[in-house]
Image 1 (cartoon, rainbow, N blue to C red):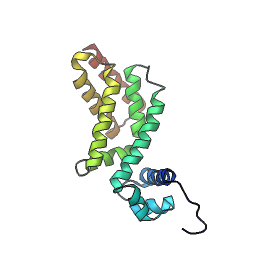
Image 2: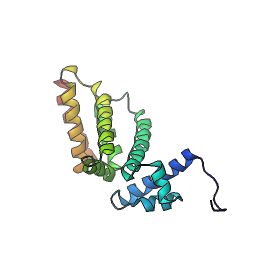
Image 3: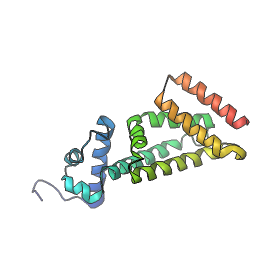
Image 4: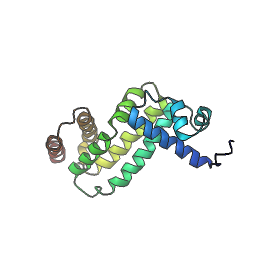
Amino acid sequence: MPANRRPRARAEKRDEIVAAARSLFVADGYEVTAVSRIAAEAGVTTNTVYWYFADKDHVLVAVLEELLAEALTRYESVVSRPLTEKILFAVEELSSMHALVDTVHSRRASSPVIDEWHTGFHELADALTRADLPAENAEAASAIIAFVVEGLLTHPGDEAGRRAIVDLLVSRLVSG
């Protein structure tokens, strides 16, 4: 090890790789970010990245897990609010990482680890909305909410338009 580098604990090094990847994926996108660039940004070798992660998709999942954990912490502020506010919160959170949402959707067919993460994410989102939905149509209603959120990410419009769409959606889903 070079004399100018301090030894780092395994968890700390992994966290630095994830932080570097997050910064690069958000700024430049997943597709154009090479593992060698992540390594350089984290101050490690490319082989070190592969020591911690099987491939770049596993790095992406680690980044997504970190982003999700942070979003769930922020979700605590809306957990007791009406369903409309929860859905708008989700749209805002996902809008800030729209490029990564697109990456997940485009890579899930070719990456089992990303597909597994995506499935788990939808299961979590489903669980978070079902409590606010009538039991008789909760499964279908939850799926419709997911489709509307994804549609609003693709066609964002303005805040008033998003709110009008979500208000109409919730009024129809909750009233039956």
